[in-house]
Image (cartoon, rainbow, N blue to C red; front, side, top):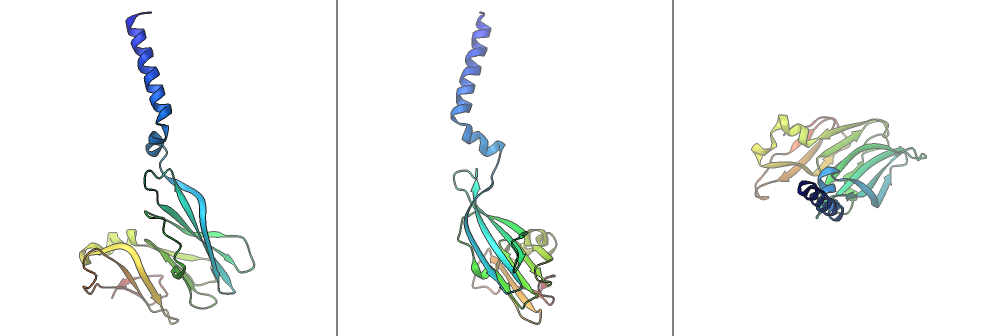
Amino acid sequence: MTKKSLIIIAVVTVATIFIIRYWWLFSLFIIGPYIGETTETWETSNQTFKVRIDKHAEANGGFVPGAYYVYQTAHENSDDWKTIFTQRHDDPNPILHYSVQFINSQIGYAFFGQKFAVTMDTGENWTVWDAWEANKIMQFEQYKLYPSIEEVNIESNGYGRMRLYSISNKSVNQPELKTIDYGRTWKWE
């Protein structure tokens, strides 16, 4: 064997050993994070339709993995679940039970992170509002707001308010978003 062949064999051998030993590190960049096993489930109902939230571990999430929250809906006497939205969060916090509200037997809403969804027809169809997408038009940063939902309150007449997280002093009065159609559309107050 020539000296060049020995060098090539040595380099390939060392590289192979390195890849085998540190594959998990390479997989973070090659595969990326994805939805893992279910770690928590919570369900609520209004006797017409139900909403379930499944919290999933973030598989391959690196040194500090987050979690995925899958919001689903089904009719009361059915196990045919449809996904409303999926939201990834940096921190694997417990499921927020107050993030699902029923206004009456037909209307309900759910929110978490950047997503808000409302149904007007017992969970058959959902309108999903995404704060990241809305930020392109509404420019939340000019009001020192982060495009993530902190609180939503909607009344039985369809009027409601949404508060986003502040990126500045919480004591400063921040503008809120308002709706007059149960959250299908949102505008500055």
